[in-house]
Amino acid sequence: MELTPIGVIHSPYRVKGDAPRQGRLRDTTATIEIFEEYAPGLRDVEKCTHLFVLYWLDRANRALLSATPPGTTGSRGVFATRSPHRPNPIGLGIVNLLGMDGSTLTVQGLDAIDGTPVLDIKPYVSSIDCIPGAVTGSVPHAPGDLDSRI
Image 1: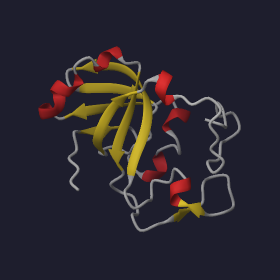
Image 2: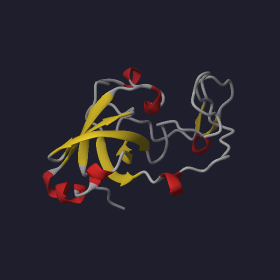
Image 3: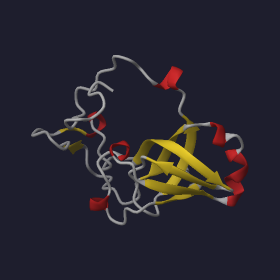
Image 4: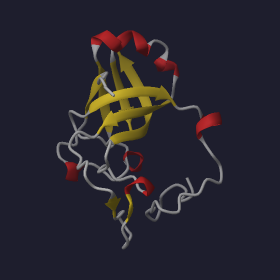
């Protein structure tokens, strides 16, 4: 298996402790620089209001198979959490697309550290990607989060 980064994230988060546990909990802006050879793939992306961004958590510990989510006391299997520390540390964020300038996207709601490689970008499609009533029993939610079932 070979993954090729298509771009890089530029964010105000410089080290792990700077980033929020979920990007959508903050209104911080970041930019995603798409490398020139992949820029043609951005055609029509500006028509999207929200995007999925898949990125490689290059500073994660790949040996961990359990994690203790914030706000909980018990350890869980890493696949039942959103921990960045996992065998294949692929990050997934849903961002608001604020603008596009050439091959650079300005987004809001990303939790990635500055310099994180981007693997892919896909449009968020609410009629497919939103599942009303979905239950995430293992993912804790802070008071004031939008909906603890999403």
